[in-house]
Amino acid sequence: MPRPKGTLTWVGEPHVQQILRALARGEVPLTQEGLSTLSPWRSVAHVRDLLMHTGVLPHRDRHLLLFERRLPEWLDTIEDVEHRQLLTRFATWHVLRKLRATAAKQPLGSGAVSPARARVIQAATFLAWLAERDRSVGECTQADLDAWLAQDATARRVVQEFLRWSMDHQVMPRLKVPTIRTENPTPISRHHRIALIRKIMTSDNLPLMERIAAALILLYAQPVRRLVRLTVHDVQHDGDQVALLLGDPPTPVPESVAELLFGYIRDGRPNRPGGTLPAGDWLFPGRRAGQPMDPATLGKRQTAAGVRTLHGRTATLRQLVLQAPPSVIAGMFGYHAVHAEAVAAQAGRIWKKYAPGDHTR
Image (cartoon, rainbow, N blue to C red; front, side, top):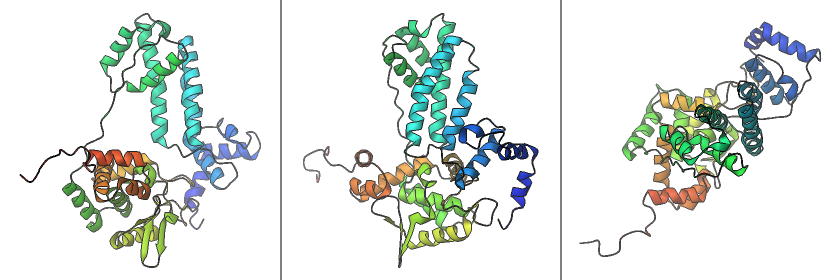
């Protein structure tokens, strides 16, 4: 590393030396399981990322590893033995199994792990609430379930998965679990979106990273979790034409945006080669070796820049499906065709429900 001072300072920390010494002397096996026995977990996570990035250890999703490590510690805090046993079954054979299946297909990210953790916590809260009413989960009635959800249905909707799992495994009686739907956020107006695009293209007060991310949201309707998975190789340059590999076919990039994008790749990316981390190809690199930026971090930076990611992305997708067939938009921007058709219907693109008659009068 051309500037190794930061790494040397980190290696000089006593707790880091303890981790490295345990691995070097063979006191702890150099495996994912062996690392999980060390502490503090933040330093261990950094060492783990370095070892996976350099090929010493096989790659595993770090969010999954952290969930697997913290889950037994949290379950041990449940005082009621029956509750702890039931939650262990639910967390191991349902929640954790789904996380592992997802991690085998794509990186999890904090957006997948946080809801999983909330499901287990809400399940424990529900069991404790039933115990206060002198009932076990097997004695739960429809009146109990309705009373639980009536207190705060929106916040407690994550317990639905535990309830259905309990009923399927004959842990509790078959009751009616209401479906609680949350509507999509209201998109920003067209004029607001255009004003934001003008701001990010002309303002030098915003950091280049925020400008690039905002442009990809407001022009291409890309969610933050997908932005962080882009690499510099997804920016394709063929002669005078620049395109982004978001789907099939690649999406053309306007000249003004292309200039910002190439300037960012050349000079604006954090943790570039020459820093204290190994080089990476992520368009939005993170602070961990070989890892992209966390979606929550990039989302917070967008909010601070005045761009509400979900509202802006929804407005952009609605405008796109009004300009071209939804199936084409879905392919180019990485959306499912069914979702694109549904957005087009909401935006008034489909004319099947148009009232018949003479509309010239």
